[in-house]
Image (cartoon, rainbow, N blue to C red; front, top):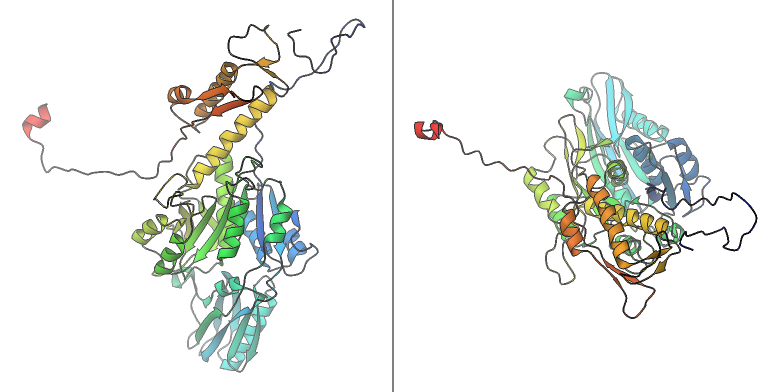
Length: 502
């Protein structure tokens, strides 16, 4: 029998018409690219480390507490990308950690009434100030306004003219909370009421990072293509690097084939970031470098970065992410932003980079991964850009779908075997033809190039020691992004007559 029936037995004798349905030639690759936000929880109904599907900011607040890291990450992700399948996981604050704290000192009282526009972790808190207010009175109003804004990552206390703001959780990330005022400036309609002056001590003193082992264990073998985490300490990054790595137990390893990448953000001046960039070499982790003056905290930047990457790479995994704006992120003010030279250098040191558009919104410049060197510590650009990872994962998933759908229960024979048409038999040449056909479709879809070279370098052979195994050398030439458009403007004041006539 050459027709490869699966259900209708060869010895079936009852007449007449019997149909077996076979979907192996009908299926198309299914896009399944969910995202996961990992952050510290502040109460809520969800248990610690539980991974829960979430579709709204209100749901995130119920699960993990309003103003928590994970709630703010979910909110910022949905602001940038409301259409992605999204999960959240609330981890416990580090029990041995310390909360960060800073101060707002009212130095002089206002001489006219107005509105004080405070910014805490990128969120604006407006305080009505009267000309009759004393420094203590203004401090009392600031204290009340902060505590009334329950989505803030801080709580406030006041004593005389000083307001102390304290992170709502233990940990290093509390040090990333920025406090200030009138960030939009006069152009944005913000300035201090006349006579009022404030002095700030930025929050510091937060220590320790949460333990990620529990949430990583709960991830199991579910697919999370875009995972955002605000923790850039060595222990946290090492854990995530192993989970998403190329080793046997990693998500890019052959045993799991889950793929994906980790998105985070790191704050610092140029020198600090240059040092931090050179210290890592993770192809599966991308860290967005932000200036000290960036008002939004790293957990919101990481979530917005992951959201825009998810939107762009789901639509086209090979298309660069440059120019995509991070909605809702309050960037550093003018005069406190990285220069083009600094941005260029940081991109070469394993850091994703951003700049501020003319409309004041932070936008991706280059989605660089942390990978910089090969196993011999020699400079290498194999995984420089995040698009490389996601193009490869798309190719692998398409290939797996085609092979597992078309040849789920086939026999394997040598090339040249004379079997009947339609038999459930494959040979190396049959599989090679399938892979070449798939590559042609991938090329048409803009994922790869040089199909002829691919076919010439593709190897499909039967294992000499195991006759049930096919070995494939798969050499895709993935398409590249247009990253640099360089022009040599070799101008003339006047072409010679001879040149003009040539």
